Amino acid sequence: MPSRALVTEVDIFEDGEVLHDGAWLAGQDGAQPGLMMQRTFLLGARYAQEVAPGVAMDRGENIGMGVTMETEAGTFTDCVEVLDTNALEPDEEGDRKVYCPGIGLTADEDAELVEVERVDD
Image (cartoon, rainbow, N blue to C red; front, side, top):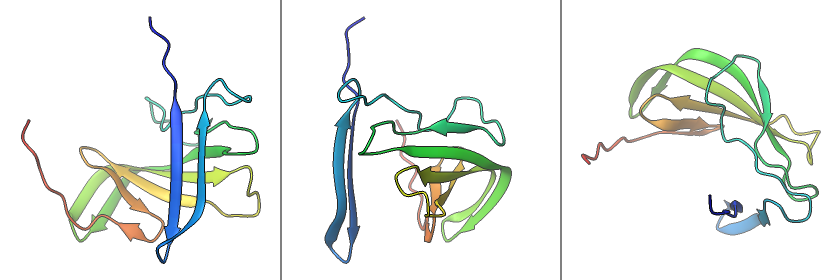
């Protein structure tokens, strides 16, 4: 199997200005790959999303399942809720994210899905 580099690049903007930018490469400087989400959603499970010491130490905690999400784009059922926290910012509460079947990320803190466009393969 060929080796693959896993890269995460992040740019966070506020009012058109970059607040944070960063990139890391799994296997370099102690960085390891993390999980976006576990394959089997287990309520209460915690997992590392990013493992790059001193750069990105994001963690996920599964805090809700069977969630109904009402947005401008519609009502979605059987969604899951994840709390994302960062070990580099221990005083921060974290970000609540909701993922819905067939849609993906539907809510991220104050941002919510407003439109869904179905594309045929």
